[in-house]
Length: 313
Image 1: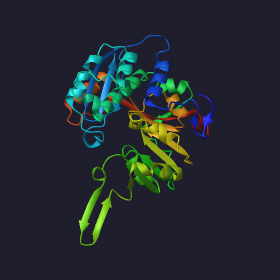
Image 2: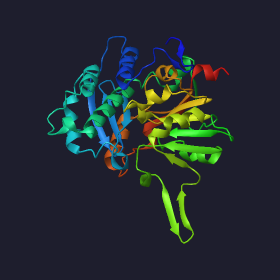
Image 3: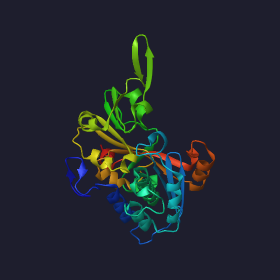
Image 4: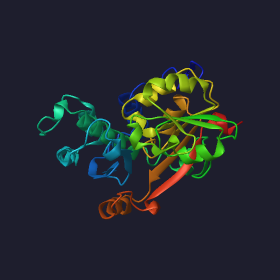
């Protein structure tokens, strides 16, 4: 990747999910060997894709309390069965083509269905990246890999902004001076409220929640900016990465953030709090059996990736 635009983001860094996936295909399939989609599994918040060569990846789906684009329908998921046996690059092309929607009545006008297709496309890319993001492979390329519990990027006097109320919220609240959170969901899905004769009190703790319109101003003043990997799916991560900022750390977090780490480095990330699938069979069986559809922890491997420049400090 070439020189840094605005001090953080490489001039040729991806600007959209489509570009991120194109770069992922180039990095992971340069030998010309293209796997096919073996199976897809959907459960609660996740879409999982396993490829014919055993690699697997997952991505967040905006469903349940996260259904900011509308509720997902199982018919939408069933329509994607046609992707099984399709080469990964062709599957992605179909998923990202807004003129191809399969045999689902009304789906062409449904934001939830478009969002689901983008989630599955990201899951395919994450599956392709499974081996290049193995800790040993990352270390060979100059990345520093630490335990999943590593939060050394937080300092007690930090002003933290999280784009997406998810992973890191509790740690940032406990470890840092202030925390502001931007999220698409309704405030009632995020906050607790106490009403009594003395007035109104909201929680959790001292966390301040904001609408997306405030993102730019908050990011500009933060010491640490964290953003969920699911923000790749609606392209907002690419926009936030390019906002003016003075932050010491730009941290991408969550299982959706499993594209080749070089692409996150190009976007100005200093760390990625990552998770990759190491046992697709166990994960999928766990998703089918468990109510919360998370699957067993042993099926995934979590770790923190520090970009090479930060690792040399």
